[in-house]
Image 1 (tube, rainbow, N blue to C red):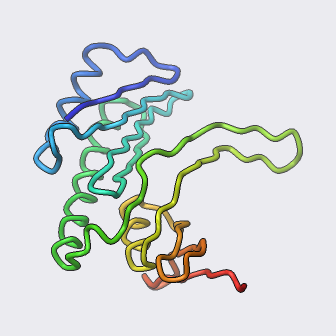
Image 2: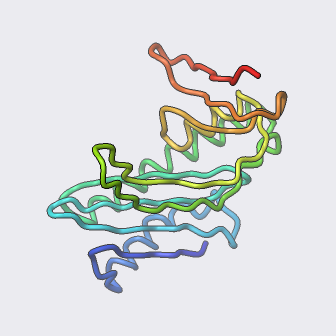
Length: 176
């Protein structure tokens, strides 16, 4: 497993780098040797935040944790990722549709400040690949989000799945 570790407002010391590689490296059994884990460490006041993004067979495993100590955040994020991986593995076994969705790994995060009342904090760009609504729900769960934008493989249109109350899902389709 390969690591790309970046620090924002924090120096990534050799000890911190070793701690990240050791903790996230424990999950190496789930990945191929050429898998790259993108890790961003950041500090804002007393908030020590770690974000980890790992592409897995066309999907993205992503987790972030915040605490008052970076080493605690590293421990917490490792637990979250392992839970996501176990959930992902069980869904693959149940579905047998690992190739049905092709979500592109590359996405861009940029900070964006608007001078008006509305402030967009972060913008993400990605190249959506066609997938079925069911697979989009799985991807949304893996990312830990409440919604997910994708291209519907059946209609070839941009759709949104979202989480509803009571652990159900909704699908938004445009009328053409």
